[in-house]
Image 1: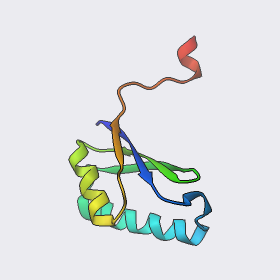
Image 2 (image 1 turned 180 degrees about the vertical axis):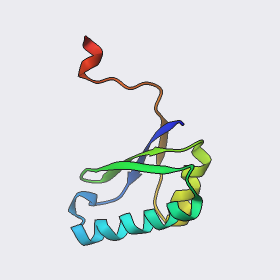
Image 3 (image 1 turned 120 degrees about the horizontal axis):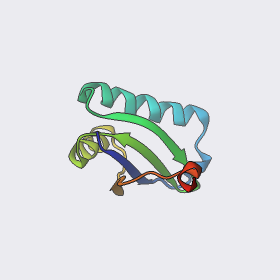
Image 4 (image 1 turned 30 degrees about the vertical axis):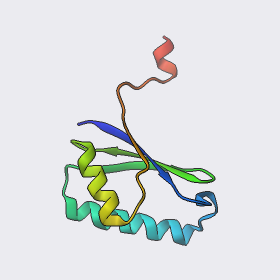
Length: 90
């Protein structure tokens, strides 16, 4: 199944409280349950003004539908083509 990185522009994302992040996470999970098992949220990284999310989905359209249903921005969606890590150097 393809993996995607979603870039979400969210002003002051790094200042969101734990309660606010929990609410966003709950909303995301609720939408994911409605969309079925083809789309999965793996993890997200919160920076100052962006959230980078890692998803597995059959296509970009399903990710866009998740964003629309949840009211989340999806400013850029990039398909992961390859993965590297320190073991790649060996």
